[in-house]
Amino acid sequence: MSNWVDLRVDVLASSNVEINQIELALQDPCDELLVWRAEAIGVDAKDIAKDVKAIVSFKSTHNLGFLSSTVNKARRFENEFKDRFWGLVFSHLHFVSRDFPKACFLTEYWDGCMSYGGKVVIHAGKEICSSCDGDHHAQAMEWVLPNIFAPFRNEYELGIECGSLWDEWMEHMQLQLARLAERYCNRARDQATAAERSDGPAPSEKEAK
Image (cartoon, rainbow, N blue to C red; front, side):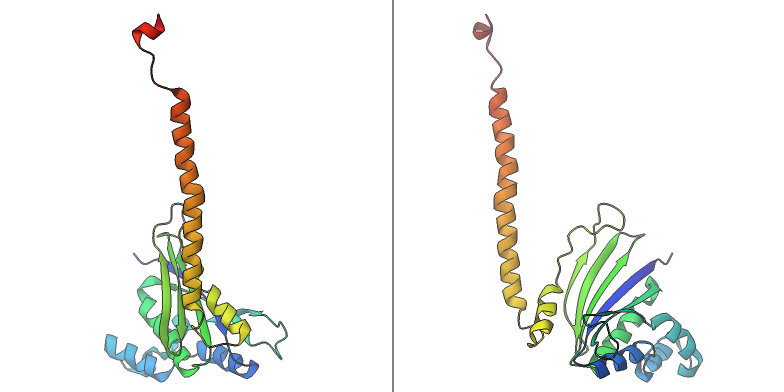
C-alpha cells in the first residue's frame, strides 16, 4: 500500500528574477531527471515526460516576505505525491537547487496516515541538514521536530552565508533543552518526592495503639 506524502517548500532566493525562474523550474523536470527515471524503469524518456511532470511539479501557494510579485524573492511551493515516488520528487528538488545555488530550499514533509514527518534543508543541490519525527503520539501531530529552519531564515534576513549560524543555533538549542530539563524534569521529580514525604511511612502497631 502506498500513502500520500505532503511536501511544502519555502524557497529563499536572491532576487525576484531568480524566484520566478525557480518557480518555472519546479514545474518542469529537467532532462537529467527524465533520463535517470527512464533508465531506472527501462523506457524511453519522452514516453514518461508527461507523467513525471505530473508527479514532481510544485504549485506556488503564496509569497513570503514582500507580497508584491514585482519585488518578492521568497515563495512557498507545495506538492502531494505517493510515497513510492519519494526518490523521484526529492531528486527533482535537488536538481533545481543545484541549478540555483544561491537559493535555500526549506523543505517540510509529513505522512498523516503513517504519522511521521520531517524537515530538510537543501542548498546548491545538497542536503545541508535534516530532522525526522518518526514517532507521532497522535496521528499527524508532530512530536519532537525541532525548527531547524530558524538559523537559515535568520541568515537570509541578515544577508549572510548559508549555514554560518548553524553552530551557534545548535549551541543555544542545547542550552535551552538543558534549562527545560533542569527546571521541569527536576520539578516533577521534587513534586513526586514531596508527595511521598507527605504520605509518610505506615505507622507501626505500637504507634497505632
